Image (cartoon, rainbow, N blue to C red; front, side, top):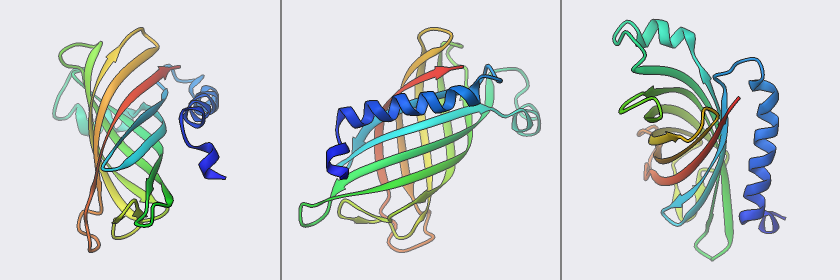
Length: 186
């Protein structure tokens, strides 16, 4: 069944469904953003749905005590990713990765062109992907991205991420992925 769902049609369907589901959640808060990421790396295809929203508590207690002003803004980010690869025998395999945690938006060089950084705990549904044993289900994802705000509601960006188990298990190979992001602010 999954083989029929791979490819651009499946990714487009996921994007539309994700944006539709997030529309209701984002209606009350103008800072809520939802979107898709598509990319790959190390022999994997990768796509993701995400939603992020401002964190007043983190902004007040973590960011503003160190950096007053609006240069850095704190967000919560929830992502559901699907990684697809091939095993040693050439058969398809995949895993879902669930990621939640804080993200820092650095409004530099401007409010329209900015950086996003984060380190978040992650859960992999299957720790064996492609030909790699990721060691276990609990992982950590660190990422950085450059985003351009095309309009007040639409943004595009590039993102690089590294996912590994941070030596919780052996082995700890890590996986490096790159993606293109499309996001819509509600």
